Amino acid sequence: MEFKVTVLGTASALPTVNRYPSACAVNLHGRLFLVDCGEGTQMRMRKYGISFAKIDSIFISHMHGDHVFGIFGLLSTMSLAGRTAPLRVYAPGQFATLLSFFKANFAESIKYEIVHVSLGKITGPSIIYETKTIEISAFPLNHRIAAFGFMFKEKEPAFNIRKSMIENHALSLYEIARLKEGKDVVRPDGSILLNSEFAYKPYVPRSFAYCLDTAPFRELPGWVAGSDLLYHEATFDDSLEDMAVATFHSTARQAAACARNAGVRKLLLGHFSSRFKDLGELLGQAREEFPESYLAVEGEEIGIKLDRHIDKD
Image (cartoon, rainbow, N blue to C red; front, side):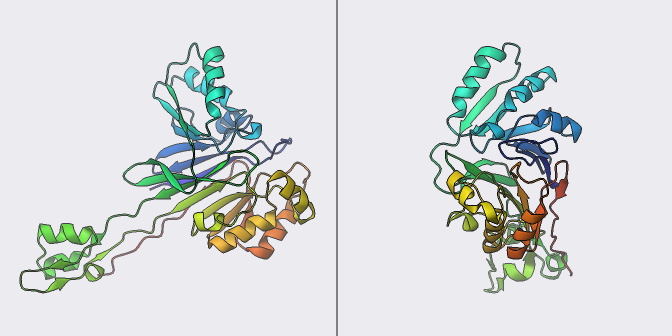
């Protein structure tokens, strides 16, 4: 069950020769999702082998240009590449105006349906996409305009039954089904089959949280708590904290404090100001707060390891 993130852009508003605007691809259980679509995203996708045809859905965090200017080109290229399947774009309500302009002026040859799913009035983590095994939630961030973070998460797996117990206790199909549901089973003779003894979870669900752009706020650590990977903006360093406050962004240290308070496994820093040619200072400040902090690198593919629970019987 694949779960990996590919970073496509790490710049903030002003791109540099080495850093493109925000975008990343998430491959979760064989479904490919694009998060944000800054200018040049489709070029980075081609460079790093991300298939245009396989994109299931697009998630736009907010309507600042460095997160959305690349979408016109990508939508057109998808059509040229022969896409016919509908495409859902989860984005703030303001995206409707942009999409209407695109359809009116550039969509004459588009052969697939583009559906805007408005994120609307979300006040806390809300599931916006789900299958039998995964779910994607959106939650509000603290920015100058309506902005949203996203959580990509595996659902809790069903219980597995310990094989030795099936034969040793002559479990019936009914009893196996109830134990897989996480229930204890009372037999006709009054004995109890405890789920904790007969069943186990085959793996621990994994999660990836995406938080660009945002200033710190009290609820965020709780909303991304326990994530295996947190991708958080780190636009400024300590010396520019006042600017971070004024522009509703975060410093690297503030991103790391969020990661520490949330108890995440790994922090990925991105959305760097063009002021910084050397990102070492940002990383150093973050690691003073949270040692498992790393710089996002464009083209880097980050796999989220599956922790399996092994039946030892």
